[in-house]
Length: 65
Image 1 (cartoon, rainbow, N blue to C red):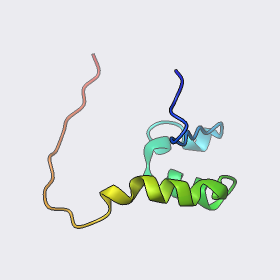
Image 2: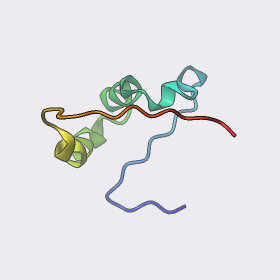
Image 3: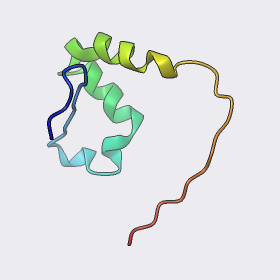
């Protein structure tokens, strides 16, 4: 699928980032401090809308079919 130009897509070939680790905040943080540092400002701008006080939470349970 084509992604919008404003998005940043990250993919890891290193097996140490296999799912679910590839979706951990540390994986994104490590990558933006490493080889994709040039995307850090763009990513920070994209996620700034989600920066703030947590006012609620909702647990979810995922189940495989």
